[in-house]
Every structure is written in C-alpha cells, then in structure tokens.
Length: 306
Image 1: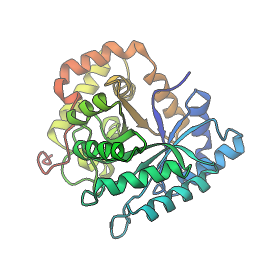
Image 2 (image 1 turned 180 degrees about the vertical axis):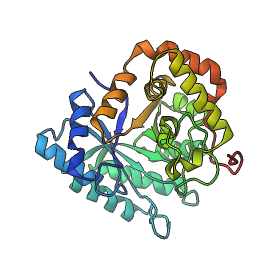
Image 3 (image 1 turned 90 degrees about the vertical axis):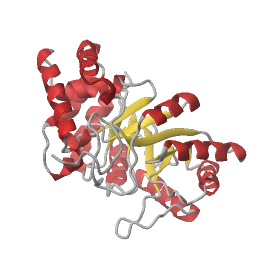
Image 4 (image 1 turned 45 degrees about the horizontal axis):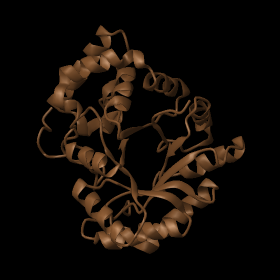
C-alpha cells in the first residue's frame, strides 16, 4: 500500500529516529522529503537506508539553494545549487535523487537563468524531476515558459505552505509563500503536484500555543481550531486524525508533507490518511468552514491581533 503523503524529516537529526523511518516504510511509505538546510537529516536518512539495505527503494526529494541562514543572502547561482545538490546526493548515499527542488525564489533573478540551472541538474544525472519551493504562481508560470523555450525538464513539484490555519504576521522564516486558489488553478492547468509543507500548522491544531506556532495566533485561527475540535467530537475522532484526512482529500493536486519522529504519532497519521470512514467528518468540516478550507491566506500584517 502506497501512502498519499511525504514523510517530512526536518526533525530527523539522530539515529534515534530510525524507528519512525521504519514505521513509515513498513506501512508502505516510500516518499521522503528532506533538504540540504535540514541539519543532519540527509545524513541520517542515508545511514538508515544503508543499515536497512533499502537504498533504491525510496523516492527521495531534497532541496537546495536555500539562502544563507546568517545573512539571508540568496544562493541561487548555478554553482551554489549544483554544489548543494552534489553534497545532498553524497550524504544520502545514492547516485541521484528522484526529485530536486530549489528551496527559495530570488524574484530579481531572471527565470531563464534558473531554468538553465534546473536543466543542468537533470543533464548531470543528479535528479529525474525538478521543482521549486516557496514560489508565487506568476513566477512558477514564468519558469515553466522559460523551461519550454530551452527544451528543459518539466516542473513536477511546487512546495509552499498550506494548512487549515491562515498564516499571519511576520513568518518565522523569510521568503515563504502560501498555496492559494491561483496556484491550485495553475497546478490543474499545468499538471503540477503541490507539496504542502507544515500542513499541520506547526502543531497549532494539536493544541500547540508556543512560539513555534506563533504565526498562527489569530482570532480567525482560534475559530478554525474550535470548529475542528467540535466536528472531531461530534464524529468521535481525534482532531489530528481529522486534519490529516482533510489534508489528503482537499485537492487531487495536493500532497501534504507530514512529519513526526514518534512512531505512535506517525501510526495515527498513517491510519487517518487512508481512513475513508473519516470522510463524513471531513465533509462536515468543509461545510462549517467553507472557503477557509481552500485558501489559508498569505502571510500579511493583517489579522495578527490575538
């Protein structure tokens, strides 16, 4: 059985996370999301695959070209991206990855230049598929056109924030983008798959109210959480399970990136995402929240008052 979500591994920093990787793999999961900027994540995944002898059985997606985390200077030159990509492949212990995404956009850089870099990644045998993360719909459309002009690879993935919570105020990280109606429309038009990062909104709907979920502390999001909790009680399911099932049924072009280093929590997510019995609760949730389930909104200054 194939699972309809990517395993997010930003928190997978030690071999103590091997049991969670085992749980995902044993349940049929084969799609793993990581990035060069995720600390030791790639190294840990590589060590786990080597120890388990399953190198080649996973579909690995990694990302590079992230801005410098100290100065936040852009790192989207061809040399920087190729260096990141080759380092990722080495740490993962593979010949190439299934998919490679540029982690941030640099709107001032011409898309033609970026198109040539993505083409080089495929030509050099580093990846089979390419995509972008934290790009706006107009920039994605422009990049697709640029790749077409040079007979480059097709864009497969666009990975932006998407969740039930509307992101507001200053984002925790610079340069992030939200998936909204314009990107959904473009995905259907161009046959793109939308990867939703942080679809659990940093644990906000599991009751997390600390700084990690700070961008989501708004009156509107409190209302959404209350509705989720109420619908979950009415249908005798957990809010976490209901949210997970909603995420995998929201749109045929959307695939969430769900992560947990705890096997028990991961087991709950695995069960929920494939549980058609939760669909009546999902329908109730969508009826209660209406358009809010399709457009989480972009990070803006509006709506930050708690």
